Amino acid sequence: MEQGFFATGENVHGELGIKADTLGIFTKGPKDQKILPISIISNTWQSTLFVNRKGTIFQYGARGENTFTLPSKIQEIKAGTHHFIILTQDGKVYGLGKSDKGQCGSNNNEIKKPSEIVWFTENNISIKQIACGFTSSYFITKENKLYSLGDNTYGALGKNHGNSKTPLHVADNVKRVFADNVSCHFLYITNDGDLYGAGYNNHKQICDSTQTRILTPVKISMFCGKHIKNITLGLSHTVVWIHENSQDIVYSIGIHESNGLGQEGIVGKFTEIKELRGIGIKSIAVGEYQNLVLTNDNELWVWGKNTFGQLGNSTYRKTISKPKKIVIDGLSKLPNPHVHCGPRCSWIFSKAYDNIISEEFKKLYELKQLCDIKIKNHNAHKSIIEFRTNKKIDQVTKILNEYTENQVDNFFKWVYGEMYNIDNQTLKSILNKLEILNPQEKTLESDLLHAFDDEDSKDFIILVPDEEDPEYFDELKVHKFILFARCGLFRDMFRTVNEEQNTVKDFSGKSIESLELFLQYLYTNKISLTADHDPILVYEELEDSVVYYQLNKDSNFSHELNKIKK
Image (tube, rainbow, N blue to C red; front, side):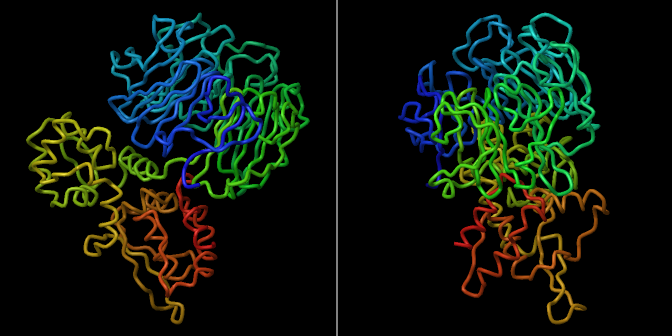
C-alpha cells in the first residue's frame, strides 16, 4: 500500500472517504484515488476536506461531494464542529461552512465555497498559522500577533467580549496557538516559552481554577520554558506532549468521565500518562473524547471513548481507559504515516513526501539566514538562485531589475519551491527571459538532483577522519544551503559560527560511505545502495540519523532506511 489511509468511526454521511459504513475497525481507503497523494486532512462533525499534492480540495460528507481550488497553494486547514479555516501560502485565510457565530468572519450564516476573510487583507495583515475550536477561529500574524473571532459564550476568544465576526486582538509575541474542532478552550505559546490558556474550564481542562469560564488568558506555569512538541484539545480534556531529557512525555488534564485522560489523574492538575513515556512519538491526535498516538516505529496507541468505533480496535462502544497498543494489518506498508482525528472519527494517512522539501526550503527563505545576496529588496541565497536558473547571479540580477519589487516576489517563491504560482504572467515573463521554457517540469526536486552531481559549485566541506590514519581527513563536498535547509544539527551550528566558515570536522563517528549516502538522501530524498555497500552496516550507522541530524520528522528518511533493512 504505497499511498492512502486507514479510517474508522462515524461515517453516516460518507465523511471518512471510504465506501464502508461505521465498522469500528480501521478500514483501507480512499474510495477515490484522485485525492492521492494526500497532503492534508481536516474534519468537522459531518464533513471532511482532503487536499492532494496538487492543491485540490475534495470535500466529502453531509455537504455532498465537492471540489475546490484556490489561487494560492494551501498551507494549512483547521476545522471546528461545522466550519473550516484555510490558510494559503500567500498569508490569506478563507472560511467554509457555518458562520452563525461569526467563526468564518462573514455576515452569512452558511458559506458553501471557500470565501476569503477580507478583514486581514484590508488591514494589510498576513497570517502564518491558524487553529479552530468548537465555533471559534484563531490566527497568528507574521508579526506574531494572535487574533480570534467567533463564539465567546465560554470565553473561547480570550477577550472579555461578546461574539465577534471581526477579528479581536488577543496577544502579542505569540509563537503558536492550539485548539481542536470540539474544544471551547484554547492554549498558546509565546516566543519567550510561556504557555497561556483561556476559555471553558468547567472540567478544569485548562487549570485548577474555580472559574468555569476563563475570559482572559492565564499562565500555565508548569510548561513554561519546556520544549513543547504539540498540544491537542478534546471537548473536556487537554493533552500536552513535551520532549525532556531525550524522552517524549505526555500529560493530560480535564474530565475523567470520558476516559480521555489516559490515566487516573488528579482533577485540575496535569498528570503524566506513564504508558507513553519513552515510546518515541511521531504524532498525536485528539477528537471529542478519543486519543491516538503514532510512534516513530509506526505503532499505534489509543485510548478514550469508542462510542462510534473511533478507536478502531474492534471493541465497538467499549471505552479504553489507558493507552493500549493496537495492531493494524498493513500499517507497516504505509509510507510516512500520520494520525488525524475528527470529532468522532480517526485516520492514519500517508502524508505526501514531496511537500516536505518545499516546506523546508520555504522556511529557509523565511528565516533569511545565510543569505548572501539582495535583489530588489529580497534577501536570498546566491547558490540556490544559480542552481534554479542555470545562470550566473549577475545575469539574473540584470533581468530582475527590469521589474518592480512586488513583481519579482513570485520569482523568489518559485526559486524556493512553490509551484502554485507558475501560471502568473509576470513570473512567466521572468522565466522566459531566463530561458526557462518548461517551468512546470523544472521543480525544486529536479534541480536538487542536478545539484548533487555538480561538484564544482559545492561550497562546504565535511572533513571525515580516515579509518586507518586518524590524522588524515577525507573530504565530502556539499552545498551549505542543503545542510541548513534540511538538518537541524547544521542549522544550529551555522547560527553560532562565522557565516563564512566553509569546513567542519565530522563528529558522528560514521564511515565515509554512510555519510555519502546520507548526503545523497538530502539531495535526492532516496538512499540508493550499490553492490559495494554492506546493507547491514549502512542501516546500523544511519539508524539514528533522524534524531542525530535533527531531520524533519515528516521526512521519508526512516521509510528509505527500512527498505535497506528489508
